[in-house]
Image 1 (cartoon, rainbow, N blue to C red):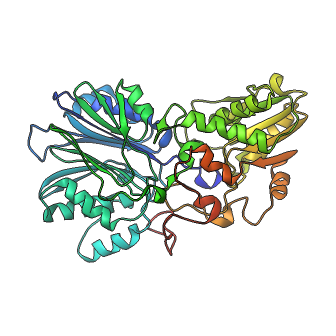
Image 2 (tube, helix red, strand yellow):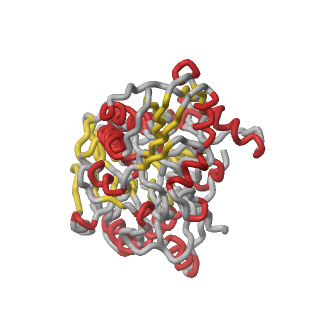
Image 3 (cartoon, rainbow, N blue to C red):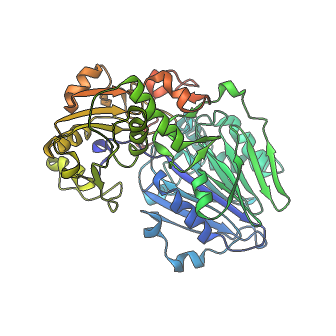
Length: 475
């Protein structure tokens, strides 16, 4: 589906890395880890592996467009030999959706090889890229991850370890990033000082793992060790784990993306000590307290609205029910019947269970309204199925500002809430009533963790870029 017509946010990207000290091949484990992170990106995926006991320049890599089970076969995984590796699933918030932009990125340079997987957006990527190009750098991609890889490689020539090179690169790059870097003998994880994107550490037998979310650790039977701290660099070698916290900020300056808790992360993940499932239940409870309405049934727009709907139901006492069937086999992109048939693309993904909603007053919970291009269709579908009233509740505040840190929130003019009142929006989507989560509830939802609320308030944790970085470098 074209980006312009899709009324959901992009699910960032997912990163996964593993170092098996017993020398076992890790490709299949990375595959299953990426499978668990597939919700974070469905455009492309890739795996790069190496043998820490072999030559420093030998690396196996495979990547392609599509889902993990479309890109990888058992034969391909068998060919990816090595006891250390990184993997990536991608949803593009900057840079085109092409095979060249699939990750992980692999660099052959004077010190050996680097495999880099990155989740996030740099706000100074364009400046850094132009600076590198002036000194002769040739770029193969249009993504800011290559800028990061270049800087790590350049710094590595000046210092005596990859981790020092990563630390020096962190002084230059600004924005949101969770990084996993594979060198010939080390696996390194780094998180930006604000902690926008999640990254955690796991352990299984004699192997250490880095992953975007704890659900990936559960999938491969690993135990959760801890989260990587915002600003922390962790280095995994055969001697174990070392940590460098020199880049860490005071806790009150941290700024996690609140949308990890509202929408991006899988509900069975735990990020920085907060259960995502509990956060969404709490959001639903807050909606019931702050925007109550009489109704017969509470329903969620699958999948991300379901947990908040359950929370609303528990708080209000109104029964929770299932009103929608979601086609699990429709990915982010599919062949549409044409621009004039946009409505049908919603119904290809969702269908209403008529018997569940007929003759009932429905409270419909969704996680967000971005452009509003599908909300009106979903409300209409409920009415067409016989719902007598449709009350919409949103488990986030209205979007009023763009995001520069890896979330695909468009320019202000494209946001339905821009220059409109809630009553205006209610009329546009055709609901009987409309209520949003109050902005002051967000901190409670994140259990007091410092969070970024820039897309709601226009107040960002760092100075936003002066030119538009959301999109392709070719623009």
